[in-house]
Amino acid sequence: MFRSRPTTSKPAAPPDPSAHDTQGGWLKAFTIYANPAVFTVVLLGFSSGLPYILLFSTLSAWLAEAGVEQSIIGYFSWVGLIYSIRVLWSVIIDRITLPGLGSGLGRRRSWIFLAQCGVVAGLAGIGLTEPAHDIGLLLGLTVWVAFCSATQDVAIDAYRVETLSPRYQGAMAAAYVMGFRISLLTGTAGGLYLAEYYDWHIAYLGMAVVMLTGPFTVLFLREPVTRIHPPEEQPEEEPETRQGTDDPNRNDRKSGVLASLTEAVISPFYEFFQRNGRMAWLILLLIGAYKVCDITASVMANPYYLSLGYSKPQIAEVNQYFSFIMAIVGATLGGTLVLRFGIFRPLLAGSILTAITNVLFVVLSSHPGDYAWLALAVSTDNFCAGMATSALIAYLSALTSTAYTATQYSLFSSLMTLPAQAIGGFSGLIVESQGYPAFFTLTALSGVPAFLLVLVVMWKTTVDPRRP
Image 1 (cartoon, rainbow, N blue to C red):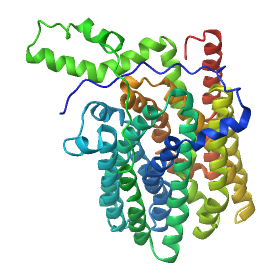
Image 2: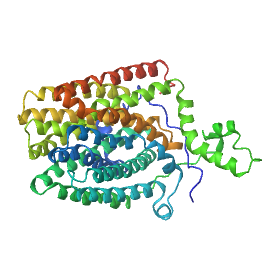
Image 3: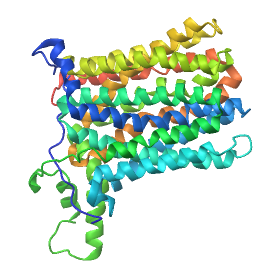
Image 4: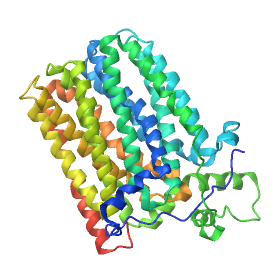
């Protein structure tokens, strides 16, 4: 029950920047969102985003109001490193079927269901704490929710990649971002409204109830089915053969354990580097740099708004009426651009726009309390982030081999957040010593490496289209 050879399929085709849909124009490109499989990803994106925004952006506002020092608020963002190391246990999710739940729901859905139940329990626990007096307990619950949330993300990513072919991953990515953004609205605007008119305890207990939509959604999903390929097509065979662990004459227990370890842990990474060659390291650098600008800035966003004199209802309204719509439009446009023009051009545009929008936060410091400037800065940031994220998720999905969906995608998504989360932990210290304008200037400059790396990878792929 616990160990079986994975159901595999051929590695996903490398993303081709020249690949685009020219048949039927823009109208046909947008009709992909009517696919039921794409719509279900919206619901999964909502479950994925809600705990994330409640742990960081919304929680930072609660900590600020409770009088917690800015440096400690910045340190709390290091809990996000759990999302960045989820690749360490993604192998378990890829290889193990949960007893009981797995037989009824299937491998992917059972892991999603179990992790979501853990998130619900953790959010309820957070709602019963007092940050000023229970900072240690609050930290422990935050770590628990982050672990469960990261676990569900591993399973959700695998489910999404395995549901439709790589051609439609741009639309799947846009649908995921759409659901994710709906959850951001719920966790920020909904959470801030509840905190304003009731209190923070009610806000987090209420969000725990909202999170129950996740387990109920999983019950109505279909477990993805992948086609089994003959052994000679399975990429994990070569590293196993090199170590001699597939020798039929070696049936001892040590050989069996080594074969299992090789198959589960080494093969996914071996396959990726074998398929991409020397370009693999450049691709990993690109993934690690792409979200630094966006994620680092978001750590101190809500404390920044509060310091400028904006009220919680004002911040909630901006998220409800402006940034939410712009984020959905940006995500949808990003997915459509990928379908029409391939991955790299939208990816390049997203890297430029995300860095530029951070400059608006610097300008915002000259207009404290001005609602129009707040709406402009936040909505523009969400539009560009939505478009960039759709392109990036589509790129990661195209890089992933469906033979090792959870493990490889977890590697990519972990690298996507690891540098930003590590840097974000120092955000409070930078704000305390240099101020908010200097902080957001630095976050804008942190987008330059991502832009340059996209250009290099894009050029090398154009020169040698056999490489991603």
